[in-house]
Image (cartoon, rainbow, N blue to C red):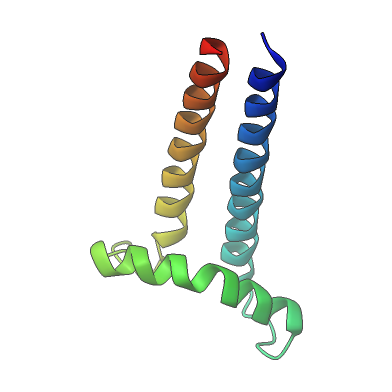
Amino acid sequence: MSSLGVTILKLGGLFTGIIEMYIWVIIIAALLSFVNPDPYNPVIQFLYRITNPAYVFVRKFVNTNIMNGIDLAPLIIIIGLNVVVILMDYIFALIASSL
């Protein structure tokens, strides 16, 4: 494999790593929503600002409040992002192997 192929694989690893970090942020925000944390805490405000746009996007298309008040938007986002990570890994591996 050429050095360009290795660079493309590393770039793909960077993109998938960022997406996986965002998955963990969504998991943490979803778990914190069960304990009703202080809304004035800067960490909580940061998590809300980072995750709320994705929640709004999913809630626009899917009725996520199906199971007695449990919000399914984080689960839908996590599954979707995992599919994106798998596809990106496959695409970057194909591109790198063809070089």
